[in-house]
Length: 378
Ligand code: SIN
Ligand code: CO
Image: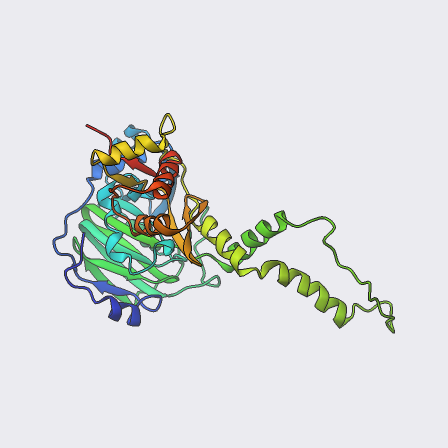
């Protein structure tokens, strides 16, 4: 999928993380990449995160998947919405929707959620912590966008849903297939299907919270700290009041904490690992038997291409003459030809060629950890 007209630079300047934008069908040729039935099929599968939001007597209710097929047959005329997370992990044509948004780096991209609603269906007025591009796939949806919300915004008391109590729209649009609404973090939004067969694709982003980062990075560093690495004061000086915790003592204590978290190189390695961990562990591509490097070379020699497991996250960090490659939580130091291969793999798409020894070792390791695979023969 490609854009025919969309000014990325202007978008970043005026809208990205700033204000919502309606983008009327920017695609070369929009084609809905997934059938509603296939989405329903995914929602019946174990390990796929799905939700069903129904409305009876004006109140929204949430059910979590996986669902029995019969559940969909029982849905009546009352508005309902089915939402399935990370559909890009299962459907290559849905994964292709991410490609035009890669002006934002991969590590900031989360996944593609897909929703399907009947007439009047929607998840109610809410706000999210992340940027999202809401692509209308099939049918029509009325989107209303409101002001920025925060922890003080009054919510409707509800066990499962965080719905805004007094939603007031500042923008109101009907989206047709191919239209896109960009919503930055925190902006209230409410989408309601107009007519049946309404499908929306949400290309969602991730932004670690300071709390999450601080907690995880600290926990990582703490793991390596020794029991005897302690406050020490061999230079103890006499203080006027024994009850005081002096500024000097506090500086030393505070310094102990800051120094243990300040290692920039260790942080880079840790963050690459942390960010490349998969949220879902369901798409296991590991071969039944570990492949040997010469088997991999033979397959490549016969012209077979390698594909990336769409559920695994790939990223690299430049490090001196080489790179640190992170795939599915595993860090590898790559130099020379292997570093060039690592950058290539992170660029995406399929990979074929005749690798040298180090690159072949890297490919073999990635195949055996289930991050790369040869296309299945039909
Ligand atoms: C939807 O697709 O119905 C909801 C998406 C969202 O509001 O984030
Ligand atoms: Co939302």
